[in-house]
Length: 184
Image (cartoon, rainbow, N blue to C red):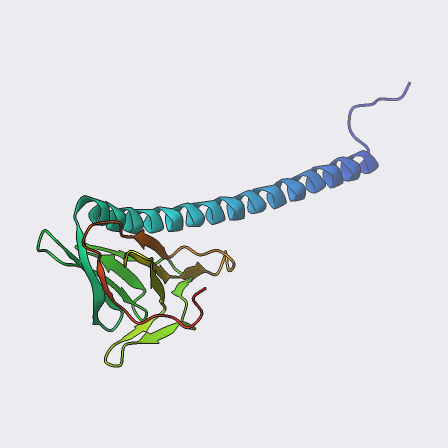
């Protein structure tokens, strides 16, 4: 009668090999899930920052009567409201910050302004902005201000400021902004 008290060397090699295959597959799944989590956190944070500033601007535009929109310096647009307090939309392409009023955010790592866009009113330069405007028959302006911001993880997505304003007030908002050439 043969004593079967242990595993043969072949059984040990097979079980060790199967265990290693399972461990490798699990590590690959964990690494993939970590990358997916990091991408989703980055995307969520970018969208939150975009929404915070955009909502802040729209809140002011629709709460107070907007009198004028004009350039106030390099990478600066001023919104003058009837309440008497102007609010400044400023962005710094070297420090990767953007702000409106007293609220300023820093862009995330690997997030950049679109440096291919460049506007000038002869005195000041707006780099990284696309501005389009026109007037309807009643001399009410349609104004579009875009400050595209991209992230290396999402090169096709825009996480920047995208404002669209149409003034229907009795006294139309005065617009003193340089316009982009490719407005259509």
